[in-house]
Amino acid sequence: SQVLHDVNDINRKQITRGISLKNTSMRTVNEVIHKAYRHKKHTNHAVTLNNITYHYGGKLTCKQSIKAKCVEKATQGWKMLNKEMRLHTNYVYEIIAMNQERFILQDVLETSVQVYVSTYQIAVGFALPYVNTVHATQGAKIGQPFVVVDCFSPRAEDVGFTLQAVEQP
Image (cartoon, rainbow, N blue to C red):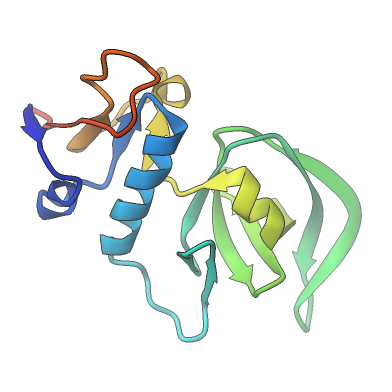
């Protein structure tokens, strides 16, 4: 492992995963990785919310329990079903359609599940998927180089973060 002295070192080392102690650091490093990440480019399939550009086919991590309407693909667009489901914290969903008012997300493990989520719900209830908090990462296996954020913070109240890159043997 090695200590990184600048948040931009994450991109220079091509690190796309991380673990953070604090939510604020998680969001900051997620945005840094997201801006440098090579997204699948699709014409007219990007929406920007709160200075984050979301891309068709991108992944999102649910950060709070959210109730969403189920939908299914129709001849023209999406058809709302008379069924709601709760999206679970720390589950990953893929963006399969979006515009400035709504996103259609698909469960990455159960691809038959598609839900309608408002852009407001995206902004407050979801995070980019590259960095998770230590609590959300418990038990997960990361099979690639990753960064540990806040690893040298003497107190949880500290402002800023310290980065340490961990490379797999």
